[in-house]
Image (cartoon, rainbow over all chains, first blue to last red; front, side, top):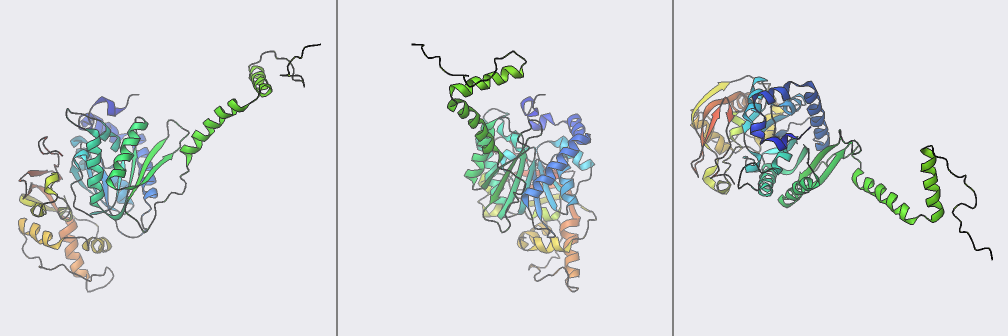
Length: 270
Length: 130
């Protein structure tokens, strides 16, 4: 299936039918709820205290409903009028704004305790109209977001990067804006269920981000790959022959028996 | 849009961020609606410290309410009996009062943001986009 990001700009792609389809699909609802709860877990906000949260790319408020359930007050931003209209129909609690994230977050400094974004910021990597620079839009977005969070405010964003360079440009822009933090990858082995979470803090926070359950998987995986290659380089002739024989045996081929002479050089008789 | 949000929203144009006159936005021709919401005194107290009270008074004046005190109410405690009345009033004003239709004007650049169906439109025309 092709990515919606490649088809049309978000405000065009999420038209009335697409918004309805998206919001009424129980599968999407389930995934969105799961990702929102995971994002909140990563945020690690103090329990039992009220928080004012910004939901970037809130769409029809699927993630916002979870926020309301968890007892947070929130404000949502989205670029698609149809999605917001669907949100209005669903009577969500938070305030909805029609805004383009690439033009910045229109709130004054220190407004929010935290911000989340579910499946949205990868849209910022696209240039949909002429004369638009995705890099600049990302930077404007992160700069204004940094300002609108209170000191020590946290931001967790789940997103679907198309490739590594998108991840890099997003993280680069966040770093330039002053955020600290990094990337958490859930289910790194599964291509289908792999989820990227950008976890950022604006300044020092009293409560650290909750990284329990997040494994440092990405470097380990590359380690293993390197090991396999390195092993092959390091193995001697006998090991090489035995490895090849083993694969042939697995394929059901007839292979000479292993003996102490395997892989030995034939010496000249005299 | 809740009244509370008016205290945080500012003009999206970059050059207006540094201007003193750009916040708060000026509210015109607004239709208000009272919508009942769950009363959460802890949230009100939590938000109170980051409210710009002058802006609250200013916006309330725009919307036709001139009866607000000039100074921010302080030392409120969600548990204490005697601050309940003030907190109730604040809850009614900040959370339950919603702007359904209207205009917001930036006093610096003069751009008009329209509110329709209680959703403010913050999309910028290309010449103002950052």
